[in-house]
Image 1: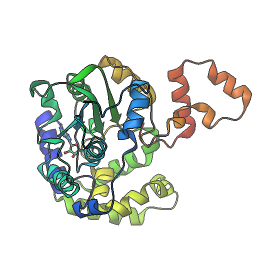
Image 2: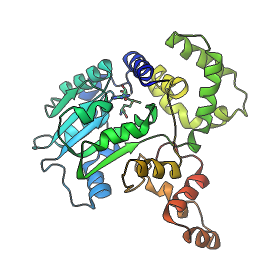
Image 3: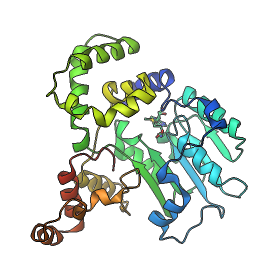
Image 4: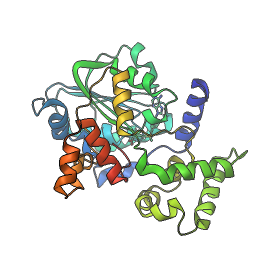
Amino acid sequence: MNSDEYLASVREQYENFPYPKRPPEDEKRTLFVTTTEHIGNISHYCFGGKRDLRDGARCLVAGGGTGDAALFLSEQLRNTNAEVVYVDLSRASMGIAHERAEVRGLTNITWLQRSLLELPDMDIGTFDYINCCGVLHHLDDPVKGLNALSSVLKEEGAMGIMVYAQYGRTAIYQMQELMRLINTGENNLQQCIDNTHLTIAELPEDNWYRRDEARWKGDLEELGDIEAYDLFLHSQDRAYTVPQVYNWLDECHLNLVSFTGFTGHKLKYIAGTYVRNKKLQSLIDKTPIDQQQSIAELISGNIKTP
Ligand SMILES: C[S@@+](CC[C@H](N)C(=O)[O-])C[C@H]1O[C@@H](n2cnc3c(N)ncnc32)[C@H](O)[C@@H]1O
């Protein structure tokens, strides 16, 4: 798929299925918290506890979808001189995010319906913190995507990036391959989703996805077809192992500060979380830190997102 085809398919998917599903009226009752955007966590992970984003920080949410990260940041930065800039390709997603912000009475977000690949030419200044969650692994060229983000990052700034992890999504990649075969020639998105449900219902008990189903069921039940499309039918989806994350960052001249495990569990990347045997632990301790993280990832086998 070339870049134009990629952009067209992304638009088609996210105009039809803005992600994640978030009814704006829910904002009257609940604030959706994204662990990585807790400003205390950002200060802790990215700035050694020394940076208070409420003091004039500029934050960019790239590929902001229906708004979770932008809204949570914006709420925490309410009544400060800090600002949040939201960028997404999808008009439908931005519409929902904007509506949610209006329900909350948030006024510190700038809304841009653009591709993040255009950031280097957008003349929107530089940022202290950039969130990009669940987006770069869908680009046809994730190096270009990360470089585009990096071009608007302040020298001392930091990013919170979520991309898929490979081993924990093994069952998903088998399902994606299966559904590509079954949906050959089918262009109707809803029909593709219906075919997926039919297929899942027929999977034998020892099928890889069937055995793994419990780990995905919650999101599928909560988010319905939108999640089903994103999980099983995405036209462009790649995942990273620990060494691949390091290589990717190297290519973009960036340093890894920490794996967060996305939901805040950096312990997932520490082998000692799983290993009790002292002899085995001492063998692992002798290896470099990136290798220890790889070992932890392989022992766990179930990490979905770094
Ligand atoms: C899986 S959703 C994630 C949304 C949000 N970041 C979250 O975690 O809830 C991916 C989002 O990235 C957006 N997107 C994909 N490619 C993009 C690009 N090149 N520039 C800007 N947004 C893009 C899509 O429109 C979609 O809203």
